Length: 378
Image 1 (cartoon, helix red, strand yellow):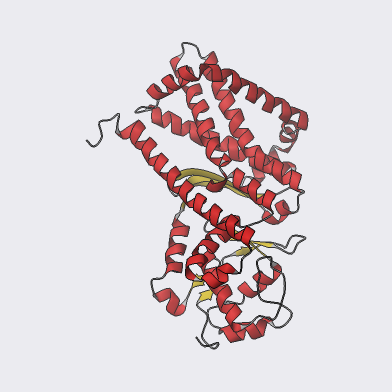
Image 2: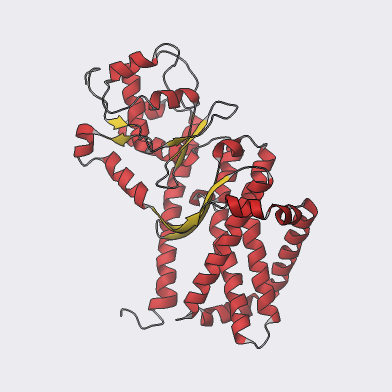
């Protein structure tokens, strides 16, 4: 391979780069998908030079001695060499931060397949910018998010669900009969409402701390129902860790409150079938919608808390990058420290298995509660 060879990747012009945080890290996001990355100052400087026209030698010369070869923490160590630029390009292509161009774009390769899958992994059904609504409701929201009010509501929700636990058998029996035919539509409607409570919790908490929320959306990710809140990453990173934890936990708390409200409606509905069924759907949707976010490998709220605890942004991307590198470039993978290597390989493996299991569970539930009762295949 020649140093004068033209690079294979290009840093897309559509990518948005946020302002750097105090540590010099910037968020890079793709406006066409929920994907995001966090790069150090030096990493970003080098990544932006991949324009699909320069050679590796030209990129190395353009970077100069002031910026060193990109490392995992974005710190400078030595002058960037053409070989280091080539390795860095391979890594960015694998992560999706560069897109194939030229000959690489014309051939069917692993990076193109990964990019194609990544862009189609998430399907957004509905979404929007909640800033105007949050600003309009600023007064009432500040009252509702006062510490005493939040603690009281959380305690009430926990006690309500604990009391309903004594009637778990009755609830499950009614739910089994309710999730048939048109009842599935009622559950789906409740699930969407539950997602609004959950993501609304994130958005309201961010607003409380003065963090702008760019978008809230709901859709599918790998066929799994999924909703998301996308705050301004630069502003969010500047919050103290305790405040960031609050903004993350606010989502599951919203789902918890929704489930508790559903439980109360179910209990107080008595013999009014429609009201009782509505409460049952709310209780089930709030519980089902909250459960996956508590599993770290499914890239939900627990995943964000794990990143904060380990202080490792992009944990998922780094883990899968290391897993692939273990097979494609063992020498480079071997340079990763023992502790990091175990973490990355373990997280990538468990994450892949968890995503497959969750997808299979969705298909099984669709068959169990819709196709089978209707007299499906066989």
